[in-house]
Image (spheres, rainbow, N blue to C red):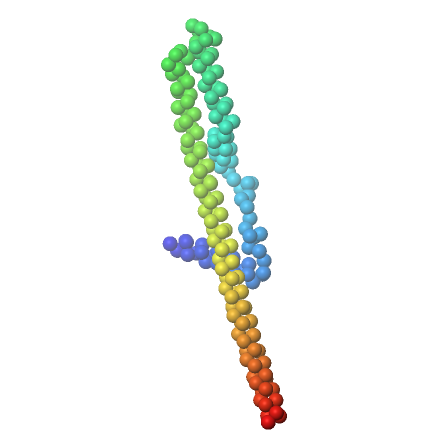
Length: 169
């Protein structure tokens, strides 16, 4: 709980600093630096990107089709994986066993990116809210000042009308 409060305080301080400097907050929020990623994170992202593409689906379907056709028709009686395709099932199981955790790692990284993006959005929204409050205060001040000027002008006009009425009488 205190970590969340510290984090909120840090975000609030960043927003206040940005307002003092009259700078854009969005320009200060850097994008993810690819150089800080570990090899595992880079591999997980690449595997998830390839594993979730049409290229992978087409290549995988082609591999399965080639395997089945080669074992049923081209190799005849010298097949290395006869009809129930036990070796193919083993390869598919191993692929799924390796691919699933790697994709989950990539999803965890994406979730972390989403949390960071939400923090940045929160900071931008907070600054926008504060800027709007400042604008409201300025407008209120201008309206009050304008009303005071109008009242003074009205008093002067009343005095002038009284003078004109006095001269007419």
